[in-house]
Amino acid sequence: MRTRRPVVELALTAASVVLFAGCLSTSDEFPDDTARVELSDRTYELEVASCGQDDDEDVFVLVAESADSLLQLLLTVDGDQVDTEASAISFEARDTSVLGAGDHTLLQAEPGAPGVIDVASIEGDRIDVEADVGPIDPGGTGAGGGRLDLVARCAGVGEAAFGDAARRTGRPTPK
Image (cartoon, rainbow, N blue to C red):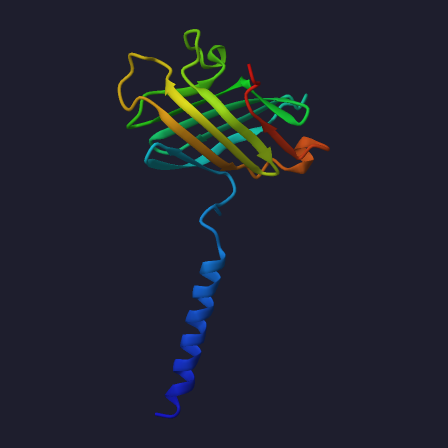
């Protein structure tokens, strides 16, 4: 019996270390080139298909998809600020209409955008967007909008892509 005790102690120690390491990690961590969309009470995990900034560093684009979802994001960047009123996001899943927020001309929607981007930020390789989205095509089928929160990691983006301003944030301009 005495010889088994060190094995049991070793197994318990190893299990404790694994459990402790699991407690240290946060639920926000996810792999590069991944997007998480929370819409109302549903969460969608998508793979980033393309992301980056144009040569003039005034437009940031992200496209992410899964087997049944598509996300498109265009953020207009002015210096170290994201112009949320000149930006747009659209999202479609099997159980939703095509939903969007932001500049109606970018969404190819009728005047009076279907929703509003409340907050958008790019910090390092992380992109965060909070928006109230609505149907782009009011005659569409499926769920009709709600609160959308996007968190994405884009491996091709970082401080080098943004020059001196690695953090870009934006909120709508007060009226």
